[in-house]
Image 1 (cartoon, rainbow, N blue to C red):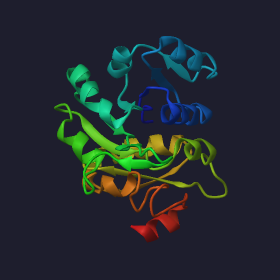
Image 2: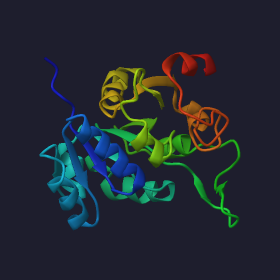
Image 3: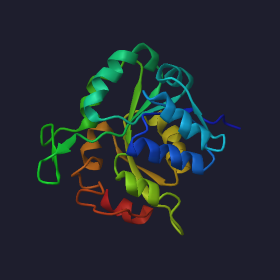
Image 4: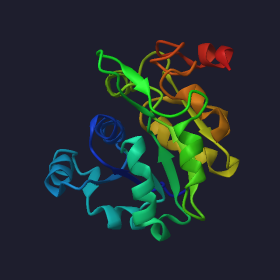
Length: 216
């Protein structure tokens, strides 16, 4: 039997907490870490034993799959600070390159045809592998649509390294969603905010697997 991949969620903001909670709710073990150690400890204490809290450095060292639930602008420092430790790891980029527009909405903070996935791939530490996932839905939907019945809702992802697809698809399923690959990292723009496959873009909602396939 294949050993369960070790997953670390780093950062417990809205997206990070939603992903970690979904894993815990499906009885999948997860490592949690954040700069606020008390926050990680509290989350682990309420997880029924399915979450373990530790330092960011130890979480990276212990896990096979790293989910930095951090803002787009923080990835450069995250990669710089932990570059050697991230070698050989699968890194899941949940980020969206947006900021408040001053009118109650959001604006894109990179070029219109640029994506966070491609920009983060360009600065990826040597030997690490990048997947774009979990940022295709808002945090509220990630929490409320997990384990939807009778059919699971789809969570799109993008990856260049097809040999890691089974690993990321396992984690997506363990968060209560059905995985569907849209292509390589060059397709990230489609599953980021304002993209045609994002909840806050043309898609506008969650979809089941048949609906999702019709959009590709």
